[in-house]
Length: 260
Image 1 (cartoon, one colour):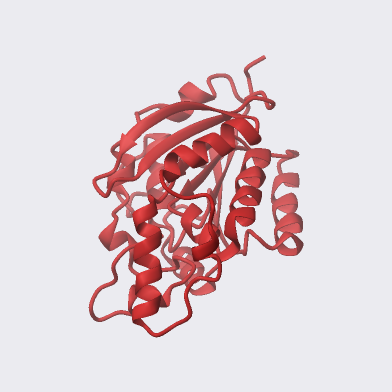
Image 2 (spheres, helix red, strand yellow):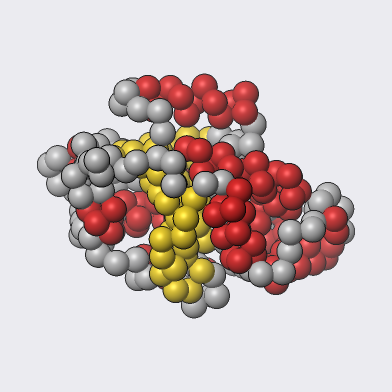
């Protein structure tokens, strides 16, 4: 998740996976939440069996995950508010990040431990990913998630794993989720991330100069998901003040719960 870091903290380039320790101070959750309509979850799953299952990939220290949970369930926008009775039966949200320290912070500060689980996971490591996700889904007798969230993560996958890694990542999310909300970083963020690494005297991102998927990244990711991953674009909720689109996709092969 690309963002500046406070002057007292580490240089942003020191977080080559986007695992910034103070991310929400610079791109606060409200910037995304304000673009999402009230009642979104119920409109997507009007007759679904509860709980719905959500997956948040690259959750950082969890502030946005908690805000999404509150917004989707129409809860009071306050981290100090107790979880209403029965809320944990509405939505179970599994949130993962590659950085174990950020996950530790998320676990310690979460106001909804019964409904939101945080775990350290490299989503690109199939040996770790597959048993972990399968174990979570099997607890609910499910084989996939109802909704996935990928918020300012695609660039870091792309820079660290190349074009092939981005394609693999998007195909994975499409196979795991009936609906998928994606916030792609624009190409200028790629250049800024590479500059920060160079400024620190570090090696450039291994794949940066060889990426053939470039330019309008929202358009490229939409094309990949719709043409190669059996998804369709349902809605663009507009752009944040830092110029990132919020795009909602739906699987064309999976049927949402209660849609039959």
